[in-house]
Image: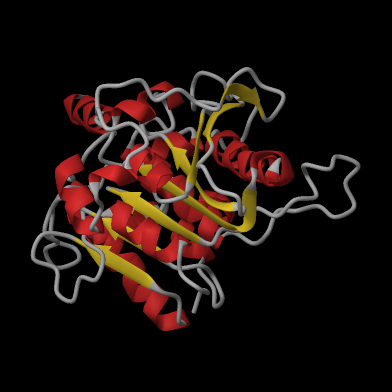
Length: 328
């Protein structure tokens, strides 16, 4: 029981992972004039607040529009909290991942979303994580449907998040397009595909055996996503859960042609199978990177001491990718 409470406590610490505002700004090469509001303490008022994108009360988003005559790229921020807690209201306060002011100052619009929380808004939804993930997909579609009104480049949309928000971002990046071209709902006809995605402390798999392989006996995460009371029950039920794992685990969805991702972790990974931070640890990134290499999908993983690091902050990565001439 104490072990599960410790895991829950770690999940609730969904901001940070060691990337300060100052470090992120320096890594991106930003000048002070690139911040629309020079004081980091000044309010960051959304252009549109509390916009409903779906039928549930939690289906709301805030949107900050970057100043630009041309349509702007967009970053959708998905809050962390293990899909069980958190709120979009915390995003402007978490200036390090990513720095909203810096994104706006570089001509990139921003949206922060709420979604249904596991255990609070998921009665009758199986598995529970389906609600959280499909809400994120609906938010992407809704924002695309507002592209003309909000001056958004419909193609250059990225997702970014800490912890479970990062896992949601990976799921969006790797899942086949959920657009329904025959739908009578114009929002549902929009694409769910991303230009790129970023995660900080992101879980890349929801397969309990894979987590056991990567983290050894320290593996504890993910059972709540499928309605399991603890990891032991999760692992024991794995065979019956394989259809859900195939649908909701990012690792299982990776295929050639998927968009690039970049994952940031605060710990140095040991060898796979050696105990480490089994909730936010870098083995999640290393394991996913190996799979992406097999299928030819770009996946960069950044952690202390990592070699050949090109982008040393989530902010730098998002600016470089979203403002590039074209995606390779």
